[in-house]
Length: 108
Length: 119
Image (cartoon, rainbow over all chains, first blue to last red; front, top):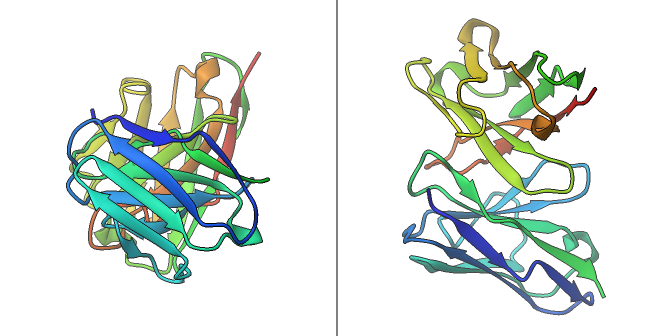
């Protein structure tokens, strides 16, 4: 099973700031890495797949990078709608599909 | 428009059973694999089960293997999760999810249904 580790657990940021979230895989997942956004009481929403491809309708301020074991999600200029929990997930080696434990982006 | 509607959650005693359903629309259900993913209160996401389009293959997380059974009815565009021998730690929101895209990332999710296991 591939273990996914996200850091930090919580990020306190101000609107307009640039934000970088990290995700590490316990072994290479190539570029088979997705990012999801989840707001309270809602289902997760796909943001990024293939490590760097934005899903349909995702604003351009979201970008993903990385390959192998190290990945980042960057939010270029944080908007009020972006305060949420973000999860990474690998789909290179399954089952199981595995998620990171999440990074909460909160208002500073 | 793709829609997945989860239902069937509720309060059940430890050791009890519950059957969850997911009604799908907006895509050709019979041609796509389906999954269940759960989230315990205040916790992260955990994939728990997968079924191929023809029901020929099913996978389970170790945490539910032998207790949960995934199934589908392609004529009814529906996915199911039969949960037996429920434990306190099965308390979670359960989501059906699928991958309609080019690979096995979860691009569509149901709204979730809450299962509470408590005496």
